[in-house]
Length: 232
Ligand SMILES: C[S@@+](CC[C@H](N)C(=O)[O-])C[C@H]1O[C@@H](n2cnc3c(N)ncnc32)[C@H](O)[C@@H]1O
Image (cartoon, rainbow, N blue to C red; front, side):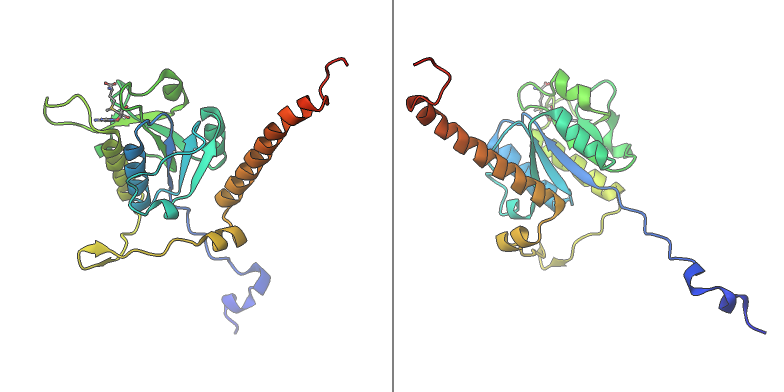
């Protein structure tokens, strides 16, 4: 007699269960004013497996101190916090503010629920009301003495990103001697020929920005040649 397995038609054979998607981390940069801090945050983001860095407001941002990691980072620009939030929502990510806030939970308790974008406050003023309003939750880093009211912003971000990577079960990268093995970043040509979704959107944004700049440069000439609306 044939086994019941052999009677199952090929098309109806049970398919392999899909691997559940691992939670991703994102870094949302808004109003971090010192270039050294952004560079350091970028370096930590690259080391701790952050999928994408979303820069809000600033058209260009200095990556001073990134130690060569900038070429590995997926950086995208957004005009407003809401636009960044909408994009993150469409990818199923929540926004978690890193701040010493009354509602914040200690990061050591790993209060994460899935893919998360982390946002920090400004070096001098902390987090603004507008920033707090787009956050779904907050974490803080417990401190153990009264020596300082808070940590440096890049240090605070690095600690939280490391906790998230640990919680998400990210696999440790191989080491060699006293270093982690460094991989070559994707080349410019490869990014151009075979862009990821984030790279494609960033290329389109830059193209639109260049076109707008060209239009603006042509405007005064048009006014001089009498192409405007003014009466003769
Ligand atoms: C130097 S702190 C700003 C402090 C600001 N002068 C204040 O007193 O509100 C810059 C940012 O680092 C982060 N930060 C620093 N220490 C932190 C901690 N212990 N827990 C959570 N976030 C921290 C927060 O995002 C904060 O807005």
